[in-house]
Image (cartoon, rainbow, N blue to C red; front, side, top):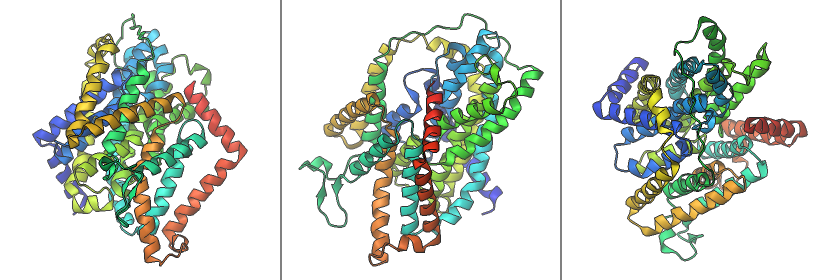
Length: 502
């Protein structure tokens, strides 16, 4: 099918009343989650995973995708108006956005954030539409050896790009790999790590781990902090930026879009890393770096463009290679698995309506977000007055009901609480749960393809370096590992993450 034909097919699917409704719900929920601090898109997608079991496949993916990139829009609103980021990627937006608000330029900051996000999201979606079929055709030549090399590359990149200690990140990946081995070995039929429990014979459900590590653990962490929200007392001002503000912001939007699109594709990347990187870029190349932290509009335009581009470009490796680049993409993979969809190059060829319908919905969703965000700023600010103590019991109840409804087992609810406790402990120990989830998702894929590769080569391990694509991926992985060992690289990585936390 020609490009224009498949694009029209996608819009035909996305413009059905049902899918438009799911797109609107996802965008609205994403904005709401971005505005309300203490929930976040990762926890929300995890909590809503059980609900997607009862939705049509395309509608479920459209809604979850809308929550992810919608949260990048909503997070900027409270970051600018109240200096309270509703989402991790909006932390850097608060630095200059709130200072602009204090100077009476909140409207301009909000408008630039929305317009930059819309432009970046549109460009990243075009990138997905163009790169998707090309990468998919390339991935059709992948065999078991190539997928083994790709999984190893993805897991190592996730550990390098994780915040904090690399050793802790590697430990999280290994724990995820071990959890992915629980159940009956399909080859030998023997049980592994079940401890005699028949409920674990089918392994640990992905939804159980996701809801526990991100949903329940998020609630427990937020209950530690007292609520202190100071609503901006000054007027928001006119929304349309001045000519000078447009002149200063459009190059930052272009650079942020480029940074976000590239980093979103990388394993371990995504919206948060893209936003921090874009802010660093803008500050370093600025002729007036002293303005940053005091209301520089480039400090709003760059990160806000980058986080939305990063959010949407992270769909590229998932939909073309079947490899999730971050924890939310791992959950999207889980949602596809729930509906019997195997992510990878076969999706575009065998289910073009699914791939192109999702791509088209992203364009529609970006337009919806532009309409939703700016006129409803007053409503979003009022929502900040809702006490978190009234929100968390309902969220926790929803988590338990959703998990129970999948298999109708109380054992799953107990596991959710167990993983919630584990997630809380990991946060206190400053260990990221994202690499663990990626290890859990990629572990079975790595094991299956490793066995296939060795079976086809009659046990010869040289098969991984004899095939050019596999050898190239392993060479890149080895290069990343060697550079990480270098003292200068380790110091630079540590300084970058310390700067992002500040």
